[in-house]
Image (cartoon, rainbow, N blue to C red; front, side):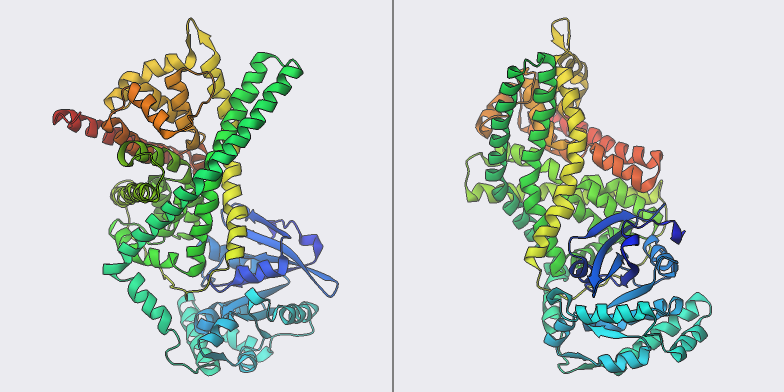
Length: 632
């Protein structure tokens, strides 16, 4: 299986494996050495991602392969299976094993496992700068003597020690430096059954760590402990999570308005020039309408609505990730997911879903249990993604807050939005529990949840990483599905049957069913046509109410609200639209990602039906109760 993997840069130099636990700075080492010369791909037949990049030292090139972070090579997960397979493959000429200088004992277990399967190892003791600040002294020479392989201390963020690391690696690849043969014999002698081997290696890792690590400040992690007393306690942990959620939403809402309008205006100007050009070359009207009124207008709407909030939300999310807060979120929610028969790691994949549900689905790779991974995939859509925020924010602002632009109203909108998100999280718990007691029965698995030390985020790196790895990636996937959607929407709005367009006819057909849900045919049609990208739901809704043949947006929320009121909207319509925004089918990008991750049409359909049935049932119930008690 290992040799089936084809590297993009294999012919560019010696292939070197980069391995290590999560949160040891392995990716920082990789990024500093390779710069922008990187490529990301999946292992054949697996959903586990491998990053590769090239670096050069003294005229020689090396292809570094960054394996997924793992605590062991016990093959309990796809990540561990892939890590072991690649290290043992003929492709890998040597392995750099990255350790955390502030928590060496934890890292040494993996080092010893790797040394059992390959004798070409360089140990990189990273984060040595953080160790110094905490009064932790690692005797590098003694560690090298005890391990019998080269050991280099680094602080990758500051590029400290990286030149020494590559110089030593070159000697290992050339065969000039080899593992101490006595150490290799000792490691081979420990091999027995997996349980005995694991215990023996853990014991040896503890002994070695105790011999080489000295704490000059016994209270070295006092600051981390004080923060954890606040961020992970029952009385304070959840309120702080909610407060941070409100702050992130407030910053996103306040910060995205101006750039969104600016981008929309820019696209409007470009659209005008495109129309002039179409007229100049005498382009047929049907072709002009399909290309400009259809495809171009949808794409411009998706980009102007998605790009600014994602460019704010993803960096904020990544800053919390770099700071070390997200594992605390998983810790706080672990008991809730355990009660629901799910895995605590689902908290992390759920958080990823706030930016993009497709990204959240991909994130479920960190969950080892196939059953719990499916639960996380099926329920990920209950947290609203970035594409649904414009719908939620617009309706909350118009009907429950007020459309005047002020910091107070922005904060109130953020609070309402946070409340909506919390409802989605609670629904995630409930549906997870329902699935674990029905079609996905099983006992929740246990897992080791590491609370890494708090670290000062690298703001520049975070911005670049979140923009290129997340924002533009998600935006591109949305563009791919939105372009053909624009053409379909234009055709439905412009192809006439008698005196009515196809769009109007279909809207009238589904209107009675939509009324049972407290909506109307136009709203439901907007959600249906918004299947490729939720960002176009509002423009389609406006187009339907105004009987326009192209997407249309108002200059102000007051104008939009008046249009909705003129078409029979009440507080119940607004509330049900908010609920349906949370409880409806995943977008096409997410469903496509679900199929890629599960390789199953069955689970893709279940992921579609669960939130959809939940939404239809909830809306029918709220509508029935509102009329029963004469609230509308």
